[in-house]
Amino acid sequence: MTVKETIHSKLESSINPEMLEVIDESHKHAGHVGARPEGETHFHINMTASALNGKNRVARQRLVYKVLADELAGPVHALSLTLKGTDD
Image (cartoon, rainbow, N blue to C red; front, side, top):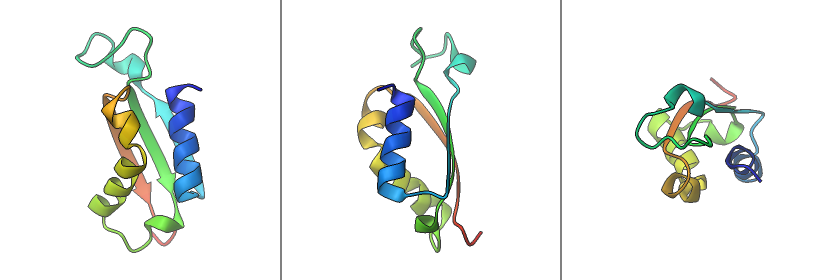
């Protein structure tokens, strides 16, 4: 399973989002610190989930970081997030 697939699977199973998009942006960072030639180091996540309702921006980010702790400690060098609740 690729890093992108792992991220998608973990977020799907733990947060059950209504909309989830995981974008590998590693190609934009070639040659930068933390980038690997094979990619899968820099990601952007667009997600809408009812589990994010009533949470502020920091609480939403912390939830995602907790779910992806292993990936952030290993292969993922950078992660940007666009997170929305279904009530936003």
